[in-house]
Image 1 (cartoon, rainbow, N blue to C red):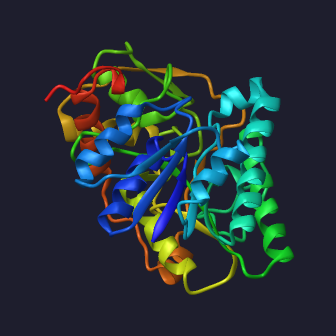
Image 2 (image 1 turned 180 degrees about the horizontal axis):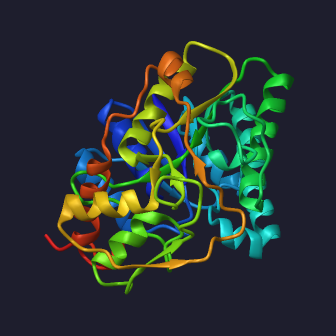
Length: 340
């Protein structure tokens, strides 16, 4: 199939492009490269040994989408959107405008082109917290930040699109905590500024870009007092999109799927796993809890296992080892040539 990947130059997008191309799909990427780097797609081509089409532009631009769908698209994976929780609190209007308008424009273009298969990049931030663990797809929905609300609202938009036309087939993939990198070390997570997520923060401390890790709270009701999350290797996550695309061909409707391991890992357990996998000591300072953080959150991924025939396979050691391979070879991310 020829698959349109919006935001395909980003962290999860690039890894998904690699897996799609490995399975024989043709890939068309729409990305304005506002929070990603053009070198990332060059490396996707290098890893895959195949070419892809890049349409440089904003998903909200109707002319950009018209051009994309003129290429003969069979299905869409929609990653494009702003994604920093803290930034969304500081600039909510920017988040609502960008993340909702992109989905509206995309759905209009898909309907006009007769393309009604979509995989939507959602998030575990749509679940009300604290929730009963593990979280399944029927848990109550709510959010505590504008970023999470845009995911929640986009899910509702897509449900309403299906109600208006039952020919649509839509999967809402709710990610937990993607980490790691492609095992080649050629593509990985390259956050702007200080990382919002744990493992890239750890790797930047290990590579010398940051002096120490901040651990927010060590008094939670967990075995070591630090917060527990469900970390999933980005390659496992990318493969989940491939299985979702397969399933879209044989069904209609809207269905949500958790993509996680079903196992919780605390902050200090992740630090210990990284030190064990790499032999590098990670200094850290304990800080007060952050507002809104919960003690634990991990997935029940059984629906994805039974319906998509997908399950996470990579270990915590794989996540740490691959993240370090990427960071150590690319200490400044994509900004400088890799150290090979």
